[in-house]
Image (cartoon, rainbow over all chains, first blue to last red; front, side, top):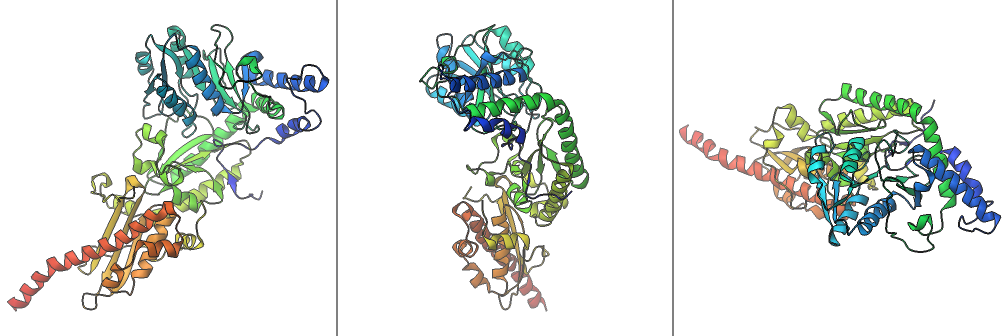
Length: 409
Length: 140
């Protein structure tokens, strides 16, 4: 089979909408365009029925009830609603929130804002494997703690946090537990009952659904979680999120969730196989390569590798027919290397050399082999060009060198 | 980010990659940057002590495409020039030639630093070796 270039292998960033999802969405743009909040005619009823069907499909994927799904514009909004909504609602109970350092900016920056409003936030560190220490969590909880927010799986390194254990601790202590579930949804099983999750942020576009459509699971029983709305208006979504529902998006989200429910078991085995094939070949052909984050507690379709002595952006430039991401400073807007890798204790020198591969539904083995070979070829070529590789091979300890840091950094 | 054609050309076909013998008294080595910052350049030049002409130049660079291109271009430019001419090369010349965007200006600065560091190293070597050479002459 001929390979079509460029190859997309950045499924943590976003995913293409599955054609089956597109097909399900199409009638809701023109033919069935009604407002789900229109209660007095069939256009509204048709839209409402479609939304309720999707709500049930999404609820089923996480073992929740449909009424517990609140639709939003995406996971950034869901995270904002969960944190700000709970902080405001439970202010009388306390002002302390616990999160951790490798969260997505949608959680970290929301916490930063809450700090400005007088809340106190504890940012738990992570170990070298990318996971938090449960004892750290226990110690951080005080009488003032109202919320724990720990992501299900990380977007850069794919590391899965000990969610069930965290849920247990939160329940024991009577603290609400929220998780950013964006990367995990539809990739690994999520069960809000087993996990003792009170809230979880979800989005459609990471599981082969459309962009601009997300949800927040908000537990209704044991305990009943209440949130202060952050968007006021017509009182949609049980008053927690006003605004006319994005019916086609929601229909697509529902269908995408249903497909994942049916295909996740098989798909994760296939992607794990491809991911391991990529990793094993790279490790057999190249020296001085390092995996960032736990290999045991990791999403099946993720691998994040540092290619020592090869700067990430130059590597991406060499494999320009492949779409992947780098933790290098040069590829970020801030010119800082990845804060996630830094939190794991990965040195800045190695952080600059990291590449994230995110495999997905439409990747084939031929594509994986092509990408693997390109990466190996370009790393070898750039190492020929790298003074650091030459020095390391001569036995010079680079960490002991007296580097003349340029003023521009 | 879109790279200029010249950056891509230098990245894909880097000129003068390699090493010169560090111990050679006529070779100056400049090693600038830091791994933590994401770029390290090593520029080496073989300079004729009589004519002060740079006869050979080699580089190796760890860094982004623009850093590789800046150092590759630097080797091309210094070759055949005198030390004084090479010292006159400014980072803005490199920026212009490679059409570097503002976020990549530091790559050109590093290349200029590397040229200056290599020449400084060569001069230092010359100063330390000259008295020794004179002493031998006197001894004869």
